[in-house]
Image (cartoon, rainbow, N blue to C red):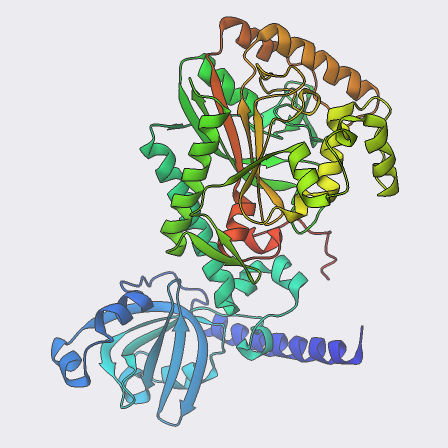
Length: 507
């Protein structure tokens, strides 16, 4: 630890000791953490209603309010003081005068107030008025300390800048960083608008299990756990896909789920082991319909939450108003690398040599499709800034997608890329039970050969398909990544309230 950090820690420790001493004194006098105050007004609501009133007009209205929040500013001036509290909506100023709050019951209340600290949570009753500087304030007649804060706010409320601390102590980050709070308010708005869009198009919101006996629905390494009562190994959901398609078999033609999924993979600016998706399935549709629908959904949500179909992300414009581009894997590689021909990209050995030069080597069992996908990820993916659908993925890398009628090596599948990262994945669903069974068997062989992300054979899902799945389109949209785009956030950790972190040693 540096000398500066040691000095800061020592200062903080001394402040904590002082505040604990104050709390001890409070405990000796009265209930230290009372629960007998409820606000009836919030800061932003008061500002929106009364900021326009002049001093005289507001005085005539004689409006009394109960407000509560965390004290973030304080100016003590002898017999009267000003304090600012912050509630869930914003801030409002309190005028606290000795002669107004002291009483026979609490003759030393003002003296106590002067010893309260920034970060303390307080409740106040009083009359709205305008100061000489025209600031909306509450002339306090009653005030109460609801919660004593034992730790000082960062840098005397100048902000929290250490990125790791922001993620670990999100509760502090939300207190002191308005931008962080706004990000998560917007996240909630985005999810609400997505839900509204789905329901307005007659999709039924459902819930499916998070504990699976067989991991499935995506190619990913699962988290394992053990169910004691059933004495069986179980897996945290990597995707809800197979359960949602069971519901379509059961007769729910349009279903969606805003779900938590878990994949035992690395951490990065775009990956968190626990993440949020929205998956939806619509009977009697195909992947072409899905692309149009997904495009419309994202465009509408963007317009509603950002006020425009064009956004700025990390200094560059993204246009959601124009029709999304559509390219095949091969077309995208050729477009952004220039050095490869279509002939080259249909030569597995050629691609394998290129990948080796790039430090990416696939197993000997991997076919042409897997090689094309790997090369695409290496040379083309990052260049897909404006919304672009990559279509017609190889069967080999699409074990749940319907085979194309035009080419038996390809599937009716797409992935949507924006700002160089995957945002959505969808396809015409494979509803041929026999074909799906054979693909599961190939996945099992791949797993036996060492592919930890390959799927297992799900016999119950095959049984469900044998009852008959109508022609169906299904798509998953990464909510966290979409929120990153619409809030101009560079890292997925910026849009997850409590991202996974290494264990912290708290003494």
